[in-house]
Image 1 (spheres, rainbow, N blue to C red):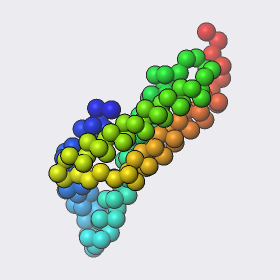
Image 2: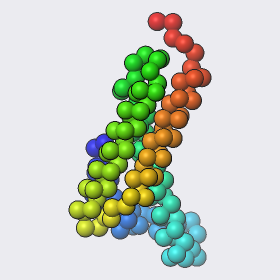
Image 3: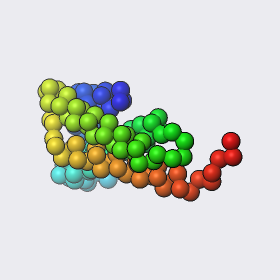
Image 4: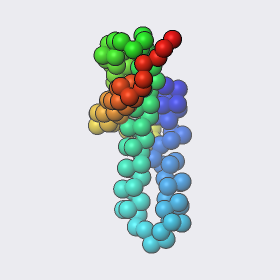
Length: 132
């Protein structure tokens, strides 16, 4: 959650991340257009939202689960906490001059949380039962 909070400051705003993505894309493809760079940057930033909330939800689930049972309860609480934090994160961004708050980002974050929990369920089913 601290990582997400720090990422919501000016430190990882679009203005600052474009300093890395643009030059990298120009090194990779020198004739790339500004519109293409902007599109790729948008996709990278939204994928970062998705990934960070998938990781958050998976870690929350792991912290809340109690043995192999109660997947639904732990997953529901993990999703709820991640969704509330996503909304609070966007609220926080509304106070940062170089950031904008967006309900679409909250939806992307919630989708990421669902993906993280889906992966937890997938790996939970494939793992053999513990003998201890």
